[in-house]
Amino acid sequence: MEFSLLGSAAIGVFGFWIMLRWEAKRGNAAGCAVDLWDAGLVAATSGLFIGRIVAMIQDGINPLTNPLQIILIRSGVSTVAVVAGTLTVFAYVARRSLVDAADGIAPAALMGLAGWHAGCLATGSCLGTESSLAWASPLPGSDITRHPVEIYAAIALGVASIALALWKQYGRPPLGSITGAAILSAAGIRLATEPMRISLAGGPVLLYGAGVVIGIGLIVASLVGKSRQ
Image 1 (spheres, rainbow, N blue to C red):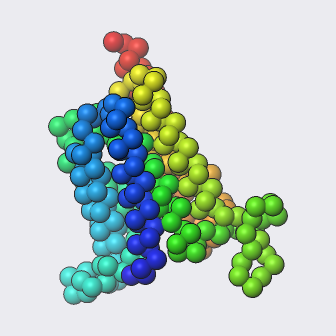
Image 2 (tube, one colour; image 1 turned 180 degrees about the vertical axis):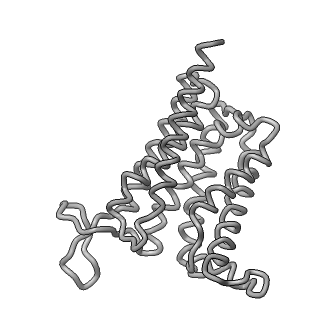
């Protein structure tokens, strides 16, 4: 595993922690930032572990006979398995008050994702497709400039995180709407920035599209539920 990835992970965890701390002082939907911190770390770590094992199986590597391969995250993880595993583990951990906990952790989760994308500064993997924009960055030893696509994603996710935290604080959103908006934001931002990424496989576009649909559905359901109360 490349140690540079630890920098990205550390920035992501720090962003998650900062947002939880910030919200805890202003009223959190779940009422306990410490529990959300534990639940978030357990879910994210478990999801990454599950995603790596699925990727190994897809590549024909037996995780039972090659356990050290599990820590080689750079060799690939299954994005779908990471998302499914993280959400499943979080749903189990927070099962007694799932919607409240999801609304409580959503802005911090977005800030954690923003930190992870910003961590490209540590890994040197910020650049995407070619661009003629003034702020685009050139490749080392080349005149070709490319979109700093990971920075685009980090900024957008950070703004969405702060916006949802402020909405939660001042807007009295319907229960579940923050979760839906967070899923919509994360999936929509990744979907919008995907064309600027360099990827042989094209990225999990269907996953991001499904996230957009699910996010919109949760927002609509929460608004309908509030109107019936």
